[in-house]
Amino acid sequence: MQAQTSERPMKSAPTPSLRRMPMYLRCLYALRKTDVEWVSCTYLAEVLQKDPTLVRKDLAMTGIVGKPKVGFHVTGLVAAIEHFIGWDNLEDAFLAGVGNLGSALLGYEGFAQHGLNIVAGFDVDAEKVGTEVHGKRILHIDKLTDLAQRMHIGIGIVTVGARTAQAVADRMVAGGIRAIWNFAPVRLEMPPEIIVENEDLAGTLAVISRRLAGLNVETDERE
Amino acid sequence: MQAQTSERPMKSAPTPSLRRMPMYLRCLYALRKTDVEWVSCTYLAEVLQKDPTLVRKDLAMTGIVGKPKVGFHVTGLVAAIEHFIGWDNLEDAFLAGVGNLGSALLGYEGFAQHGLNIVAGFDVDAEKVGTEVHGKRILHIDKLTDLAQRMHIGIGIVTVGARTAQAVADRMVAGGIRAIWNFAPVRLEMPPEIIVENEDLAGTLAVISRRLAGLNVETDERE
Image 1: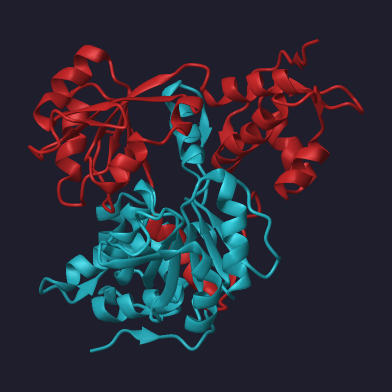
Image 2: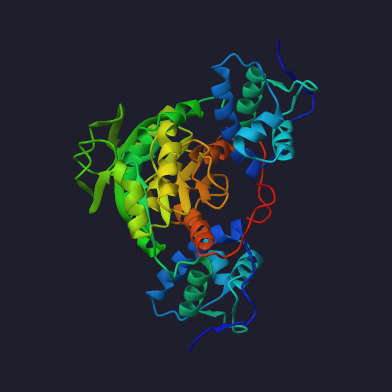
C-alpha cells in the first residue's frame, strides 16, 4: 500500500523546514528497519521533541497526504521527503583541502545516504597527493578544474584555510561546479548563479556563548 | 575616541542575527589591523554582500550607537559585539570522540578567538589515551565526569558516533556541563536546563541538494 501524493505542486521550501527534513528521514530510516508500516506526526514530534503542528506543516510541504487517524506509510513518506530535498539523485562532489576536517568529511559515511558522493580529494601537499584517504584518491589541486569539467561534478567542498579558500572556489567554478559548500571562515565572492552554503561553526558558537552567559536568545518562531 | 554605548538594555537576540555576529567580527578584526578607525554599515554590508538595513538592525541590537555620517569606531564596535555574544569571557570545554572530526576541532585555532577554550579530549581508544592531539591531552572517557566537575567545565563537544552520543552527553551533564555542542547525527535527550546546539551537516546538505535540483528554496526573510 502506498501513501498518496497530492496533485498540488510542491510548495517553495522555507530553509528551517528544509533543514529539519534529514532529522525526519533518520527517524524514518530507523522505523523502516522494524515492522512498523505507518507513522503519525504525533509520534515523530514526540521522538524528536518538536511541536506536532510544526511537524505536520513540514511534512505537508512535501505534497504527501496522510491517511486520517493512521498517518503516513513509512516507505511513501521516505520517498516523498527524499524527492522534496532532491536526494533521489546522487550528486558528485570534489573536496579541496585534505587536512583534519577534510579527512573527516571524506570518511563520513552518512553522505552517500544524503545524496552526496565525494569522488576525490584535492590538496597541494606532495605527501598527500597520490595517497588515498578513506578510500578516496587525493589528487593535486592543479587537476581540479579540468577533472571537474570532464566528470561533470556538481558540488565543491572547500576545507582549505581562510587564505586560500577564494582561489580554490574560483577553480571549482571554472570547472563548472555549481554549488560550493564552504567550511573556511571567510566570505566567498562568487557569481550570482553559484549556490554557496557557509558552514559557520563560529555562528553556532555565538548562540551557545550567549545562552551560557545567561543572556536572552529569541528562538526562531519557525524552529 | 570611543563609540558611545546607549543606556537602553540589550535587546533579546534573534538567532539569525546572533549567527551573523562572528562574520561582522571577522571583518572588524581585519580592519583593526589597518589604519581604519571608523566603519559604516554600508561598508560592512558591501564587503559581506548583505542588505545595509539588515546590518544596521543587527548592530543596533548590541546597544551601540554610531556617529551620524561617520559610523562606528572599530574598537568600540568589536567590544560591543563581543560583549553581546558573551565572548568577552573565555569558556572552558571538553571534547569527547577524538576521531577525524574531533581532531580537526581540537586543532581549530579560531576557537580561542571565539571565546572557546578546549581543555582536553576524551576517547576510549587505548592508542589515543595518553597522547596529545594539537597540543591537547587525550584522556580516557571514564575520567570525563569527575574532571568536568572539578574543573567547572561549561561546554561539552560531542564528536563520537551516533550510537554512543547519548551516553557521552549524559556523562557530560553528570559532570555539571551546561551546554552540549552535538556533532553526532542523533537527537539527544537532555534535561530542559541544558543548552543543546546540533551541528547538522545533513541539514545544510538538504538546502544545497534542493537548490541544485533547481527546486525553490524560500530565503529566510531575516537572513
